[in-house]
Amino acid sequence: MRAACPPLPAPRTPPTLAGDLAIWIFILAELLAFGVFFIAYAFARANNPELFAAEQLALNRDAGAINTLLLLTASYFVVRAVHAAEAGQSRHGARWLVAALGCAAGFVAIKIGEYAAAFSAGISLSSSTFHMFYLSLTFFHFMHVLLGMVILGALWLNARRGLYGPHNMNGIESGAAYWHMVDLVWLILFPLVYVIR
View 1 (cartoon, one colour):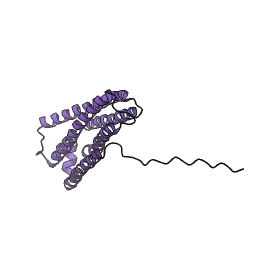
View 2 (cartoon, helix red, strand yellow):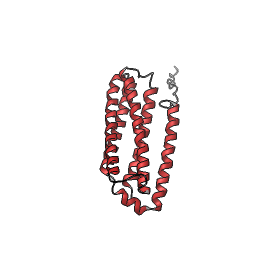
View 3 (cartoon, helix red, strand yellow):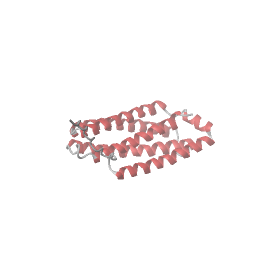
View 4 (cartoon, one colour):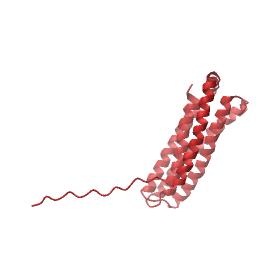
């Protein structure tokens, strides 16, 4: 009597890129732009470490740390929204997107407060090399957060309508990828500009 052959394993499906290819090209271009900014900042800092260290002390590190927590929490909520859509619970995912938008709004409010304090103290792009980099880098990121909020808002509208599901994940995955890029950039920007001396 012949022994039964074990069943052949199911063919593996190759991994696919989450979201649309166009969003990944856009993300890579944005990361390249931020990378150039970060390298320029590092060179400027290396040429004048005393000035950078002294002016860094005036920054509100608590505000920066709270903003880091807000962005990380928003990313967690976005992940939960994607998982809800994968499970066919798009409308439930919409609630997670509202929570992510709330965290993003908190980031924006704190950043505006930081800018208001800096401008009231007479700080501008021409105040010093450090302030030029601080304002340029953080404002460039700030604009990406605002765009991210627009994207999250569009995802929320679509999720409320039940448009996302296991067979229609492209939109929500693309939006989530963009938001995680915004988060990643801040995780580099915050220690670089606020913390490292």
